[in-house]
Image 1: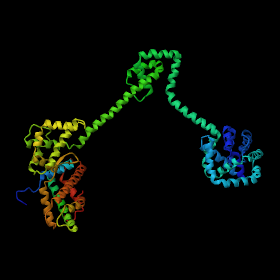
Image 2 (image 1 turned 60 degrees about the vertical axis):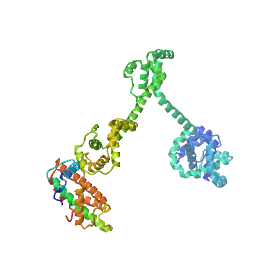
Image 3 (image 1 turned 45 degrees about the vertical axis):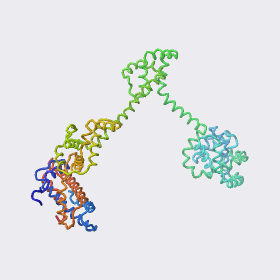
Length: 78
Length: 480
């Protein structure tokens, strides 16, 4: 990562969660949330890669991602 | 054969009509059910006497005869129309296939006649002799008997009552009853009035009352009529009604004249009722644009245009200064989208103010008023801003706007994990779009879950414990 870059858009994450939950978000939760999001992305990309390879596609494509999205979301359903 | 005896009594249509005319003839037929056999015998003598003379009642003992009677009765009951022609026509249709059987029946019947007489009462013996000439009638009856066996039982209960009354009685009461009912509905309202009127005075007086009252109290009468005739419509003149209560008798005389007036009045009310839906339609027109609106965004867009385009004159609504910042940061792409976006907010605002019909006109007017220059002057930049806003600003189900994650961050994350997971090549824009959509759904789901946990703990704030609880529930996360 470039040194000057933000690690993650902290305020944006907080706004997103706040809007979706209609609740206030306490101090350090957004970090945990972003961690969760990173885990989600990791799982999503891994699944998408597997799917792409099974489908014989060169890289990760929109199709492979879409195909995997539902399952991955279900995994991260509380 | 028993069959002979059966057809003989019932058969000829002429007889049937005669029987229908005479109640006595009808009664024995109905009575002949096995329980009533004793009665039937007594009645037979009556039948022989009362009937035209050809048809004495056959012996009740034979089941076929009973069946024949039942069938005849049931036919009468079923076919209320007294007309001989119909019955004949029906019989003929049924008979045609069975002419052979009928002929056989005639032959057999002649031989078997004495048997029938033995079972039957002495009075019945006379009958066959007279009925012998009426063989044609017998044939018809026999046909009926064979057919009737199946349908008879269900009909039994019904035809007995009907038979007592017979065709003539049945027909008359129905028609009269129908007329009476109608009369009651109409008259029930009118009769009491008339009676009151008559009581009050002679017809002459009533006529006089009409004239005098009519001139004086036109309004009064109308109001009363409305109340009396149609309870549904509240009288327009409530005050007048109270006054009229004392004068009711006099007013009653007017009813017919007044009724017209009352109807007119009611018609006016009904017009009001009609008007209401018209209003509703207008309201619906108003509502529709509201539904279409995502109101907060568009006015903000408008402001942005003005600010960027250096057209400060227009101030619609200033929702988000924060948006402007986001807008500025982002790259601008689409011109087409921009044009669409501009038109929509204007029209929507107009729709709220005006009916749908006036939309186009007003929208044009408003644009002109705002200054076509301002809108048109907005270059691709403004359009780009709107497209950006589309991406950036979304509204959650709670009506709260929120920005989406910056694509750069998502792309960086995706690429990192794609490499780690062994995928080659870059992430295509389409794939990135799909990933953005997935992360969007993820945050929505996450927000719902966290909110559920927080509410369960009676908190309005999402706490770290909620996040921990949520992540502990990720039982299915294997590798991570």
